[in-house]
Length: 379
Image (cartoon, rainbow, N blue to C red; front, side, top):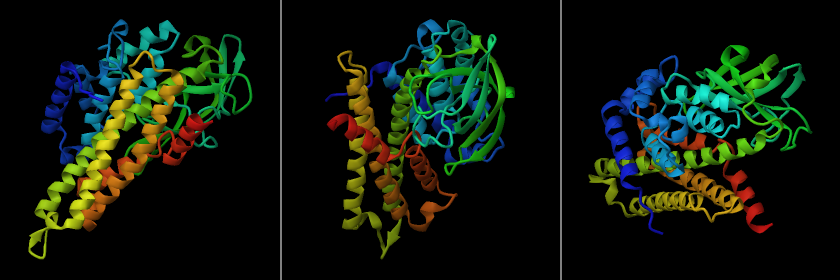
């Protein structure tokens, strides 16, 4: 397979690389990470001015009109610098659901504000009892006149600590584990009870409580009872985005580790001269190349009109399975070769490894995606 980004995509990636070199060093990032918000709204506004926030959105909605390849290229660059700003939550999940919404009025009212950087959003779908099952929804939405009344709990809401608006999934019919009967609603921040917590990678997430929250029927993001298909589509894009971010992290860890072994000396010689470490670095390089190749192969499948939905789903599950396995290998080896320094907060290596571990827990871990792949491939 011969995969290459086109000239426009290469220019975009190069411009991101240059901006991050000048404005997003690890030291600069740590200052922002330790701030109250945990990210920089100033940076987010700059991303809007540079046009980055428009990439996933269609030209009809005022966006760049990029496809999944453009999104993956962007996320790969974000992974290399451990981006703190809420790209996944606002652009991919929140924005992606609105982009596919049949409610034209909501689309017009929200997407331009996402693109100009003034609106941050989040998806509140997972619940404490659901683990990785997005159809397991106990939150209820009961019709009351022209409104719906929502009651329930949402957990681990990515970007929820800073979001201005939330897309919330609730059950309007059916049983708790049914895929049908799920409806998506757009709620404002002040309608919700929100608590925050920091994950192991430093990113802030939210737990949300809904108690008799009233929302107009005009704020339906999906058709009534038809929200699961929209969720599945947004989740597939998010899995590609996370995989691309992980590939960017793997590239950075490999480069950093190789450079370190050339300067770290033991017995009077650089440890890069030790054959056993050379073999291990070759293993991590192969793991990175495998991951990148499968990512690019999956992108080709998803942009091929002849690929069926079943084939696309199979490819994404295979990708997440490999990313989980190879991400752990590369992260473990980076820590091992850096020794005790690798787990200190002062060195960037540990932060990259924590983000890889976190990616492996978002929307499903390696075992979860392996099981789904086996079911799809061999059933």
